[in-house]
Image (cartoon, rainbow, N blue to C red; front, side, top):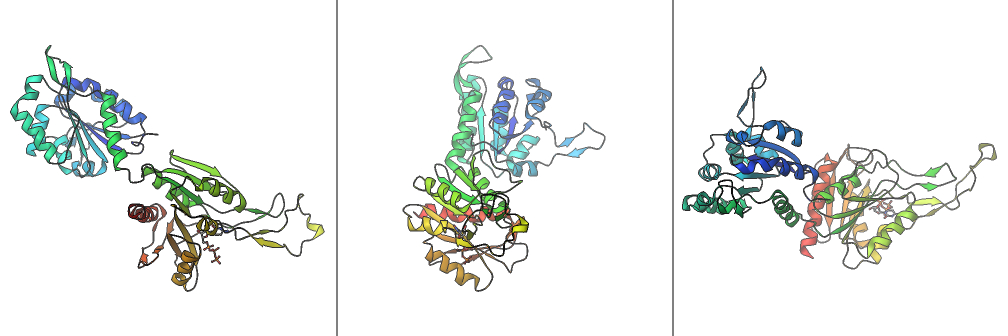
Length: 404
Ligand code: CTP
């Protein structure tokens, strides 16, 4: 899967014959899983039609500050557009557009958006060879690089003028590759293998009944999805849950019982860089599973139970290079109990949920956590959506990796 998956890319097209290649750029970005918003200058429209680009990007193409196509004119907010994008790609970047970019001459939507953006900006110049090598153009390119923009250099070859030389826009495939390698380098978890557990485990009493709990798995799925977005190779060992979606870069290993979860985690452990144990593993299982459904009239006064293996403690006892993060659900003396688990299970960190916090824990879309590490002050977070909690937690994991 491409690192561009789920990325929001703003493609700025300026007036150059190379604009005829931009539908292919859009196609490749969309194929990689990116969302593409095209912003084009008026002169770009002489080389490629907005209809072609809106068709391939599946989004309305923007080119002026005000959308006058309908009766109620709409303001195309360049600040919002600039902040929306994870990356801006200006391809082709004509000499005129390069000059406007370097001078902050915001007389069109593309330049105003460029000036409002906080994301990385890539630019792929395209023009005739003499224009390209002109000192004025060269100094614009140098200035743009100095300002932190990323140059995708023009290549040499046959030009529209009939001349041969440097000034051709880089080929679409190579432009996409430049974006991909940038994001790959910037992916904080690139090359890391992370195992995340989620959901409950079901411990069978008979073929139809079980001991289980109300865990929805939402926290574990949010963690897995965000870790994948950060470039990690994620295996999600999931107990029975329903309705949770996964990022395409997450391998889901479905398990039912604590024993199966233990096996999956231990099988993966040697090759794993971090384990985040967010599953609500059943602490006890029936000592014997009835092979036939227990009949009501036969009666069942007691179910004899035995403890399941504590997966986290087991992994802690075998710990080498792996970072181990556990969860703790506590009602009283929360910090002290969580700290005790942190040490007892040989963990790097523990995420505390307090049963006293409304809106936190099982079944909710929100969670309220305190992140605890050895010899560090607890970091307490407010109630947040689980997707945001996942980001906070993985930010700590990144710091632990960095310190290794
Ligand atoms: N855990 C585990 N295996 C188990 C039980 C729990 O790996 N059989 C993990 C959970 O995934 C969680 C952590 O241990 O990351 C703490 O779980 P919690 O239920 O809070 O604590 P317990 O260790 O079970 O202790 P207690 O229930 O007594 O508080």
